[in-house]
Amino acid sequence: QLNAQDTLKFQGDIYHNNINQSSVFPQLAPPFVFNQKDKIRAFGGNILGRYQHTISPTSDYSVQFYYDSYTRNDDFRDESRDTLDLDFQHRFSLFDAQEIVWGLNYRFGHDHIDGTRIQNGTTPFTVNPSSVNDQVFSGFIQDELTLIDNKLWLTIGSKFEHNDYSGFEGQPSAKIMWAPHNQHRLWAGVSRAVRTPSRGEQDATGLISVTPPPASFIPPISASINGNQGFRSEEVIAYEAGYRTTFIKSLSLDITGFYNDYRDLRQSFF
Image 1 (tube, helix red, strand yellow):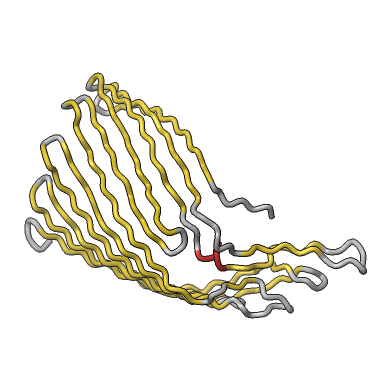
Image 2 (cartoon, rainbow, N blue to C red):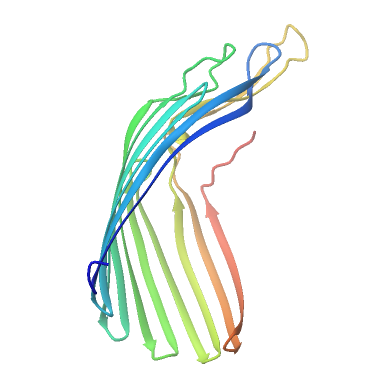
């Protein structure tokens, strides 16, 4: 606590893991599956720095820095990743009945995945390209308005993001709450959220299973998963409504209902 208005925080973690596990992998030659005892070594660490300044009881801002490094060595794959994250957030009130929160974020990631080691004549997992740099730019704004004092509130906002896999994404939301009595609250909301594609969903290839042939002159049937550069974000439009009543100061009851409409979901058949 630097002074009454300023707070500075540092924290970090460092770790090292030794893991022994047994894995089962498919292969194209008899017996079409093999067991592998893996000796895995994983290590890494992170550091976080955060500065927060209070301007007034209704206004403050914060700046945050975060860095993470991670390495994992398997018998069939080596993977390392470095992530840098910068974040800014500001809260203030325009009027007594309006509070606004907005922020900006930048994330940079660098990875290297080497999954080309051959096990029993098979390469279980590959990623091409083996190394990439990822960037995510994002921002958000949320406005909470009191439409009627102690009776009606409206909260609207949106997150905006640009990533290297699906481009620009908007995630708006709106929620309204009504208090017909000081012991009763009703609310409803609608929002859009996305799950952007991962690195593996666009760049990875892996052998999933091998079905032995019914006869020696028939080849085995193999199933594999292949990354797709055309894979887009999974999307959900979420609707919610709820009710809360307070019987006494120490006891309340909530009832909430949700309806989610999903689109462009990834589907696996294996």
